[in-house]
Image (cartoon, rainbow, N blue to C red):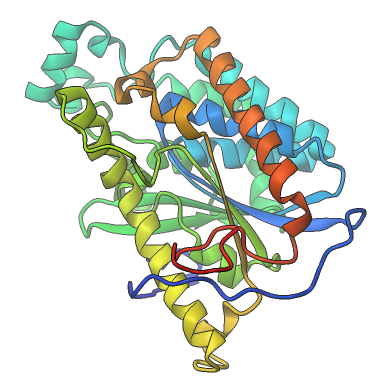
Length: 354
């Protein structure tokens, strides 16, 4: 994985539990937290709801944000709002983003709205169906997000992933790189939109290669607590049998694959650090890392993958409510553990599982 302002590369390894610290946090103390926000089209409104609830907590400070696709949009909107008006500004910015997106009608160009024309996107490329390269999301982002402010900001620190298509690698754009093109690149579905060109390179959706990335939050941010807000479930209780179930599970596995690779690598480094190995290297930096996962449970698993292309305000509000409820439940169970230990255990056999 390449950072435009540096390089961070780690190989996948065996999964394992993260190293846990033993220090405890006072409930009244402020705590710095970084967020890794998964992409998922319209389902990103769940992430909006989760963030909206978390931002109600006065003790929470935002250090870093990474995101892909819809997660990148949420990250940029939160960061921009935070710079302008703190936590209340962040909440307002997120709501404005999703209200404006709901006015677009669909997360797709007008030529692909009906089922018949949807089939056309399987036969013809966006270079044929959308020769002018129009993307209605551009106007929304230009209206909602102050890119100049993000470029100058030192915190919250942003890492937006996109897939550089010619070499098939993930590229991370940081604060100085934040433009409307950056976010359009991160959210570029190649069967709907033309590849986004930035400085001579061409990009597709960041979810293909980093959805979301965690490494830069661990190795380039000060916060030792990282929360993943996940849209696509990692696990399932049943073997899918219907065409719909198979398609949904296939989509979940594909878009979770980059996240799983990073979790496995962090788990391996955590195990090595716990054994006193790798001191002074990347594995040593994992010591003290507290990793957390917030997801929507059955309510999100019940959604069909096709609903990621919906963009009506009623659906967004429903997802926002699911996100707020999930965040409230997470806080009720785990708030006291923030700053003290990981609540995400990568090895299910670990007796210390949260």
